[in-house]
Image (cartoon, rainbow, N blue to C red; front, side):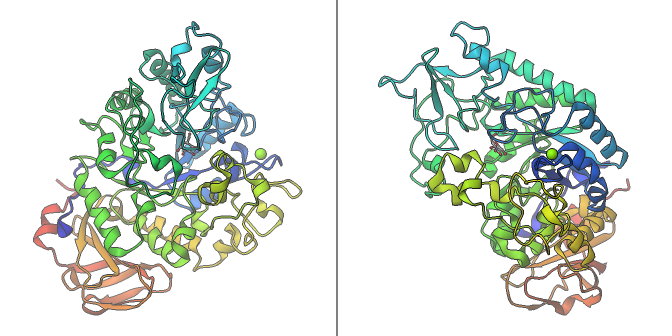
Length: 561
Ligand code: GLC
Ligand code: MG
């Protein structure tokens, strides 16, 4: 199906979450305003010019709710408040308004699968077996040997069950023991969560990214999970096949209930953290497209970085999309090693060009626009519970290295926190050279590339919503495709390898103009019959007098009736 990928099936007008670029801020590490070493809402407010300069359309904020911070906000004690570390509800309202004034949307990170063990709901639930909130969480009697009720595992190491001596039962937690999981078979829980969503929708937020959405419902019989014979040995949690703790069919009714609520408020977006294989991923759009508009697609972050593998996954994904579903892509997050660490700085640029020109909404992780790399964290400074609970695997599983403060300039603390403050995690050793100020002044920097790409995308409807068509490049290491809208055709050519090429791309058109190159040094007319491509280079070209193949003709959407 290489040359025959489907085109966008949704008719215009396209929604903001289809056209725009989403930018994830990890609030602890963006900008500290009060000198406690932790980023905060007032800090983000100070950096709106920066966000605007990135030409992004939506900010996704990792959790800002009150939390004991055992998992840095993914352990919530109050879903309708702001943790004092980050500021107040008034700060939040100010930030939301200021973003909206600049045409930027705001998406919150919603964590419905588990609360903090300090949440009043759990405090009640654990107070007695007969408490009305007992069945808001998942309590089970000990197994026959007095141990955990079954073999389920925590992502953060060890069993997914902890014993509560007060009431003589175990409760479920697939993350830290301080993150007890809610029972979505109890309708009161769903209602309580919908109430919390309403609170933020009424305040005007534009949507939610829903944490671990694929885990929300567990097997009602609590059956043991089978051993996975294909386990790659990487993450201990992968030892079992998670057929009873993840992706249960009943989860879709819960997702629909969230979505129905958002739809009451007009054009809001429901994003799912769907860290699952392709065939399951596409189910989170919903049988009637009534679940997530954007079930997050992690495949580019996990694939082997070779042109044939990436092309194949792109086509597999497009082909698997239900009719009318809108694709999306991401390269980084607070749970993944830094993009530049995974791919190296040259291919990080190629990947950025790919992300911002593929068909589908891109999501970007703060700091990747500077080419930040994982920052080594000395053992005594490790904060991430996934690393603290599994110290022997900390190098592999620790997530602190990708969560370090954003360096704004070369001053003390990189301008992230006032001089004299102690940032909660160390800045990268290279922050004096690699920071926003330095890269803004360098016309060839990664930051300049990111800005050039987002601006080009914003100015070019074909790159946002145009049809995708594969292009045969004739070179194994080169992935090429076009984006088309109305009478315009744009050609993207990406060299995943370290050698240069001269390509014959006359099937697309006779000539073209380079609009942007990953090195930010090439522009002007080029012949498509012998297109020079440097090692690790990516190009965006405007095709002059395009040739339309039968396939591209068929898929070409037109904005005019
Ligand atoms: C999600 C979050 C991750 C967190 C986990 C538990 O995967 O992205 O950071 O630790 O859920 O909430
Ligand atoms: Mg602060």
